[in-house]
Length: 106
Image (spheres, rainbow, N blue to C red):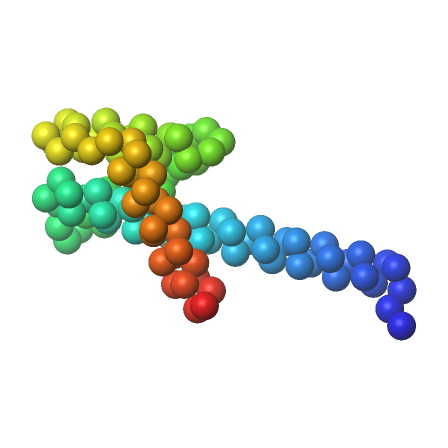
């Protein structure tokens, strides 16, 4: 029978793994969102990839995902493609499921 310390280490390991997976899923979601926005703005190829990287980096500016939404609203409007915050958040939700599939394989 496992001791309390062994169970505690097991829970800590699982928590750490869950946090790593959640981080990877969010990064993947932001990349997919960046590629989606790039397509909306007419960017393709390397320009689209660079924009997706910029969206991923934008999520590191402050806690939460508002920084990503703000960036996309501003950038899309600047390119003459105004898209509502609500539409962007809906796309984020849809892409979160896709990102989870890509990262975890389920």
